[in-house]
Length: 427
Image (cartoon, rainbow, N blue to C red; front, side, top):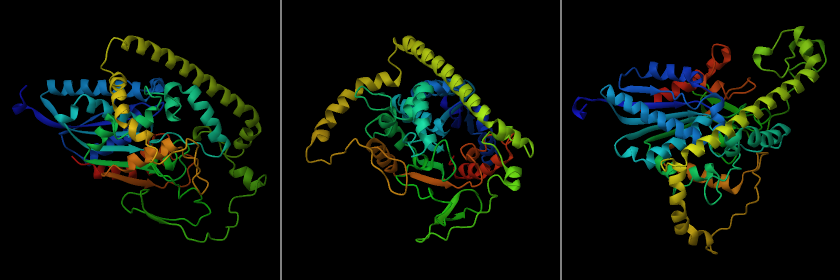
């Protein structure tokens, strides 16, 4: 059908996170449609990179999503619709996939005929996962790269994605490469980050900040001023120079009657039980926790093994084609490296030690590579950031997108964030 008779369409792609599927973005999909009731907006939720497939890496996931996008555009064209504007939003891992997809689209000159409009992420580890000085974080840094296959390695930057040994996240934040160049074309870039209680993607990597002003929020005297329209979006916050006096204990003392009645075992909400059944959970915890942990590790091991087998098969099948971005990049990178080699070897330039550097205020260590990623991402002129402050939850990671309001009523708190995202969305 000719352009004269085609209907112009704004394509919005929503990408879920690790272990996810499109249903996780049901609230996001619903709210954007309620906010923008226009037939010219076409919302797409990719299906192919879901559940166990999310183990296969940011690059393979991005390739799958890009393939679906081109298929969707072809389908729309058959219906007499022409994509003229493009937006993409990613949640958690989905934000990294979105950045990779943008690189693919840029490389294929997609943006020569389509205007990139909105780029958004929510609770996305833009500089990878950080190593906090805690047992849980140290265990995670050991388990994730080994049991989450290619994606786990890329989360912690232990992969060597480029021919020069750089990790994928480093390459994606490099201003000289297609991922960054494509990202820079978007008219509007906005990222949302949980300020507290995100045990999955903490503040510093989601907000791309080299310090965490909220790390001592329970004792610093932090005062948060919320956006009245979009709670729990933070409008401003203040931390007094002198911390307030230590507050008296408000929770019951351990092993008292009140403590037993209010105790909740460290289990998912659906496994919580009221008194006196919670005492049974407490008694059985020494047995239940190791059993549960063993089952999780076995499950992760099996999924990781399946993923590596799947990747090996995919790379074998892919050997005959040069369309995949990693192949294109492998050809271009030596040329780029030659150009910047003199700059990197310049003895007058600033030397960066590869030792980790500690940031004050008990924040996790930031590597020089992560500092460079932060600097380049924060240099995007159109970048805007939103802090989300959700107290009184164990993990705010799912709450920020109201991921499962059917089973968890408190997830509705995140609808304020989604309404903000939808209301600032530019058609």
